[in-house]
Length: 236
Length: 205
Image (cartoon, rainbow over the protein chains, first blue to last red):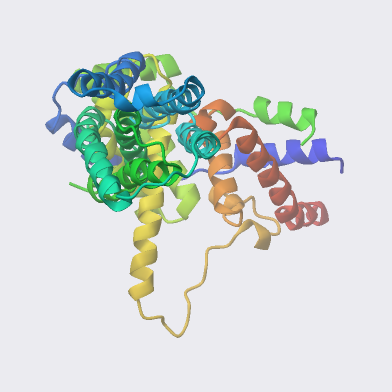
């Protein structure tokens, strides 16, 4: 028997196979419960609005920090360093915002791949940092690192609160991934603020004190979301 | 996978019910009215989608009681997150993504319970599967029972629920290529499983 006939036979068997009948009583019960708890809901705003809002948080926090504190880091960077650090950061922020928008709605595209793309671009950012920064003497390494980490978190936490508030109307199917994405965006905001304001160009300082803000935020987001969001999955 | 088998997969859409089901656009319109708290639309939507969803669960589990519980859980979750559906988007992938989530959660819950259970000496007999049948026409659940979970899921959505390859890809957060591959493998698997049935039929005639 050739494969085509075989496929047709399988199709025929599948098409004519008996199917389970749904218990009508249960369906009536479900209808009753749903109708009893019915009230109008406002659907989510369009994807464009949410994307603009998530990306806007990143931009707004960076601009606010720029207006409030002198941008000594920006001035200390060369043109090449500025390009290779800020261009990937903007691209990562856009990808994370896009991924968050998709994760808010079930079955809204291939959201996992966008988050993974952002993660791989972040690795490229680290590679660029290795290329454009050099190890430099820094006598108060720990003191400086602690100060920068605190400052990064100081800007990342408000960003995380705003992102979480915006995202709270969504229904992520993978809460851990959603939390890591949201935390990653907030942490990236903290990293961008540090790159704008911190004049220390020591490679080790940047890789530890600055980059750790993003990683810590992504990890905290993952943990927080894994604990909080499965609630929508459980029975009332 | 060759081009002809891909096109065959795309052509192999199925009417899930004997009665003509509502068109996708009509279902989407019902969903929008459900969001606006229209009681009649809610009842109609539940009545239209429940048979499909029930069969989706029944084919995965082979247990009508569990399928019925999952159907209820799915509707409760749909009710809770109904605001996340945007009018104009395809409805079925949205519904099946939630249904999948219910099934996965239930599977994990049962696995946790099973880990705490004490085993009995004699195992109960398993339902007859396609591989053991010789002449009786098997039910859909029996036919797909021995398929790996991911293939069974794709085949059920394709043949029982009438979803397109694109819709299945959206519902399962995967690519169309991956869905095609799973469906193709499911057919290959079924071909070998149904061999005894075919031979039995031939011997009978």
